[in-house]
Amino acid sequence: FVFPIGGWVIGAALVTSSRFWRRWEKAVAILLPFVAWVLMFLLSALLRGLSVWSSSDSRNPVIPTAYDLANVALVLVVLIPAGTLWLLWRLRGRDAPLR
Image 1: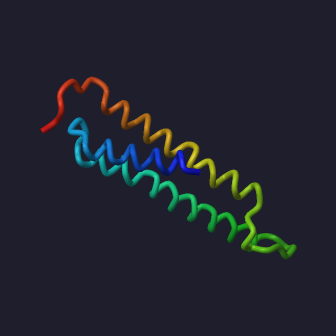
Image 2: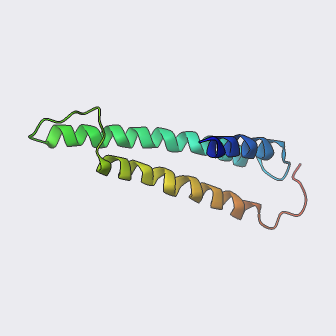
Image 3: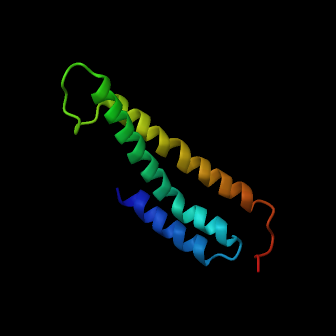
């Protein structure tokens, strides 16, 4: 639990202190996990609402099913590494810090 959060804090500090990144790239690096979490919660609420609405049997809408969790976790598993790879791709070939 400590490694992902601590790693993000250290990474955010390194990105903000580096002059190799543009401001909007720094914003993407810092805000991407928060955007992923918001998308995850919205997708979870949407899937939970659809499954409760379309289901004939009564189940607890507060407890997510494994199907809901798998779809929602896909957002985190895909979006955050894709954003990281995109930022690394943007960094390639920069020899000197930007002004």
